[in-house]
Structure formats: C-alpha cells, structure tokens
Image (tube, rainbow, N blue to C red; front, side):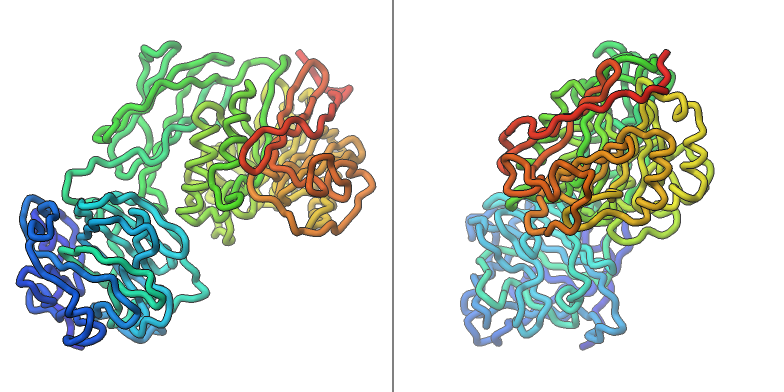
Length: 635
C-alpha cells in the first residue's frame, strides 16, 4: 500500500468552508464529489467489502443532498453517499496507511465523518469495524443519536440533520467522542484486548459481524494517524457555529472561616470569574485560575478570601463566550468562628457506580435528600467514581452527581479511596477526579511535590470538632510524622470531639476483616488521643461498632451493594450490620444509605438514612449517640 499524500487540518477545513489553525497530517480523505469512492487529491479509494459487483455496490447511491431530500451541507448542495444497511458480508473498506504490525505501532488515530440519518438508529449501528475480516463486533457504533461502543453511547443527534462526528483513540486506550466540535463523552477501552482498538492498514465501515447496522448518509470521511486534541477538534467545528459549553457547573470546596473555594469546568480556556456579595447584587468580582485537565478541558478555581465567618453569601459564575455565560444565583455559608454550637453534616462513601443500570437512582436521590437536611457540609470516605482516571466515569459518577446535586449548595470534604486513584499514581500526580477537587491538603508544606489540593491527608475544624481525612494513596501519612504532628496541634488537643475519616475500615465483617495495617498503626493513635468516631467505606454496606471508646461506622451504601460478598469475620464489638442482619435488609447491613450526623449540645447523634433501589426514602434504620469526651474544650 503506497503512502498517502499528507494533508493538514487547515487544508481540509478550508475545503469544508471552515477555519482552523492546527497542523495535523491526514492519512486519507473521501468526499464523494464525483459520485465515486475515489480519494481526495489522488488518494487511495474506498473499496466495497464484497467487491465492485457485490450487493454493497448495488445498494449504494451517490446524489446531491437535495435529491435525497436532505438539508444542504454548510450551505452547499454537495454530493453525498447513501450507504445501505449492511449484512456481515457487505460494507466498505477504508485504507488507512497505518502499519499492520501491532507490535511496533501504538494506538493513536482520529476519524471524522460528516454524517446524517433520515431515521436515527435505535439499535447499535456500526460506523467503523477495525477487524478487516468482520469476525468481531464493530469498534464504534451510533445508537439513539449518540456514538460509542460496549454499551456506552454519548451525544444526541436528530434525524435529517448533518453532523460532524469525530472520535479518537489514544495510547492509553481512551475513546473520545465529539459531535460538531463538542466533546460529548470519553470512554476507557479494555487494555486487555488491544487488538480490538488498533486500526491496521485496512478497516471496514458501516458493517458488523452480527448485523448491527443501519443505512445513512455520509458527505466526508477523514482518517488521521495520530490523535487530534480537544481544541483541534473544536476548531474543526460543525455545520453551525457552536459556542463552548459549561461542562460542570460551580461547586463548593474547602470551606473555611474566611474563605470559600468555587470550582467549575468549561470546554475551552476562556476567562472566568466569580461575582459575590451579601445579596444577589454581588459587588465583588474575582477571576478564576485556569488549569488544563487530563480531559483537555479547562478547570476553573476561584478562591474567595477575606470573608466574614458564619455568613451567607450570594454568588454566580461568569465565563466569556459560553452559550449561557452567567450561572444562576447561588448561596454558600462560611464556617463560623466559634468552638461551640450545634450543626449537622452528611457522611457517605462509595457513590461510584450504577444500581440496576441506573446512574440516577438511588444515588442522586440520596444526594438531593442530604442537601435538604440543613447540613453545614458533606463528608465522604471516597470512591466517588469507579475509576478516578477514567474521564467518562468521573463525569458520570462524580461531576454529574456529587458536584451537581450536593456541591452546588454544600461544600464537601473528601478522604480519597482506592478507586479515586484506580491505578497507583506517580509521585505528585493527580488524575482527573482529583483535578476537580480542592482540599485543605493544598496548604501542606511537609511533602512538597507530593501532596496538594487533590492529594494527601488533611484536617479541618468546624465549631470545635476536629476532623482528619486520610488519602488511600498515602497511608504513610499515619506513620511518617504528619499525623503525629497533627495530634499535638491545639486544634486537635483542645477540640471538643475528634473524628477520623479513612476509606478502608480498620475493622469490618463483610468481604474483609479490615486493614491490619490500620489496626496496628491507626487504631492505637485514635484510642490514645481520645477520638470518638472513625468513618469508613470500601465495603458497600452499613456496619457499626464501638471499641475502647472509638465508634467505627462503615457507611458505604451510596451506590451498588455488595450483595454476594460473604461474612468473613465476627468482631465481638461490631453489633450492627455485618454478621448481624438488620431489620429490612436482605441480610447484614445491605442498604442503600448515608449517615446524617447532628452535633447537639454535648453529644453527637448519628442516623443512618435508608433508601430503596429506585430512590424512595425508607427511613432511619440505625440511630446512635456518642457523648462528647469529658476533656473536650468548649469556649
């Protein structure tokens, strides 16, 4: 196979009547201008999978868009190809110019199609098939107006409308999907089956091994040996000018007595700011700092400083050039400058996935319920996405749930879990989920380059109650001197109550007996320093027990449950859940739940809030009271 003439995105986009600035070589392009499968600029032609005299050729048509009763394409009545619904023996062969030797060629390519359907496929309909023999499932599909594979589809196309569809597969086996220049989804692919995602010198179009196909129309196809960036794809745009969107609305982080951090995410790096004040008239404006994320999006962070303690503020976010540049008025409240007083907080863990195929119920219902309980803040033991380095998981389970339904109205503090890293992070690295967070760990100076706003343990105090949150990636913070130094600080020694939050429980009865390391290193420190409570998750259930003055609570039922996990230990001091079946549970403490805590006078009251899988509220299934330690200091 000869080499294709290299083209640039600039040249391609100019031919499409658009404007671009990226210099990105093309491997092949086809625009059907002369009513054939010929390549542009004498490039190699597409071929019929079943030969020039086969059924594909007989059913394929080339006509002006208007002759198919389709809309014009960018204002032009261009010639387009009508491709048929293909059987496994039908389809088209696209020469890519790629190397067939998978051992020497990494994954990394971009495909663009100008696509239209008269009827949007409601079942999976193949767009590209990397297997040149068509013996496996196709690689990329269209379904219900979106694009994707392996049961995940993103985006929304409608019938009789032209769209510029782009997808890329990179060296980390991540599929990124775009429609009209807008990123509609990301999807991790299986590294265990790289042959399914690598594209060789010849791939197939619009065919699948088991008839998952539909007919449609295509005006242009481009393939590139290399991955276009998010900004390059945005430059390609679509057939109508698309303004960049607000991907993640503003959410609250790192509440302090005199400051509040507000974060949000946009498609591109336009300037952003926060306006705030004591009323909806605002009066003060703070620009955001911008950070290019691992999703090629822009994460904005604005730290509002010099605020009054215990005060409600109104705020809104403004972004230049967005479709909706200003967000609605919202309210936050700073921490009070007091070591006394009553307050509430909601605790949960493991809100990471789906329940019965639903990303909404019951997790979103529980976040909404929690936000309405007059809590001062949320507190979590982590596992907020199935994989913290999966862009699609982080968006579906964290940004579009935790941040949207809780973080918009209440700040939350995170003790990171194992799934929030998923793969071991290199020293100092933060992945996508941690990029979208700002914890008090950002002020640590003991491990420069290792810890930061999205990594490492931290502490905070609210109304005289001391909280310490550990990071599952940094269990060494328990023993490396950081925690021991924390235990000597007045914020801890003079607190009226001390609470620890750590993802993996020191003690547990379902699936794991708990962490032996934490039993050895953490528990003695908690007991010696009179901690009242240790909160965890990791197992997707509810358990509670008390040992030597420390109450241990596992509240990991915020998403799917460990329905099939066995009881592996019966600790004598764990008396609720685990080896003890709770009333109303299928067994053990298998509830969808979170725990609502109320500091009232000289005691802490915990109430486990239970829900059905469809999000219906059941009620309180466990209630307990912990008295304030006798040596707790109050002002």
